[in-house]
Length: 70
Image (cartoon, rainbow, N blue to C red; front, side, top):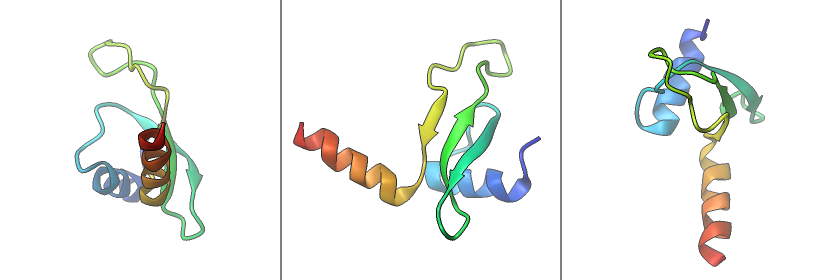
């Protein structure tokens, strides 16, 4: 079961509701989710293609800069 405060924080970080179940596996120093582990299947049985998802704002920005730099 997803804790209501985790669901709300992850929705805010993603800018949308998650498509399936997840568990927060890493948090920042303030307790805000940084990495989530998605359930392997969505509710309809469709495989979830990404098992771990980076959701922390600072971390997403840092990785985006690295990817943009090649």
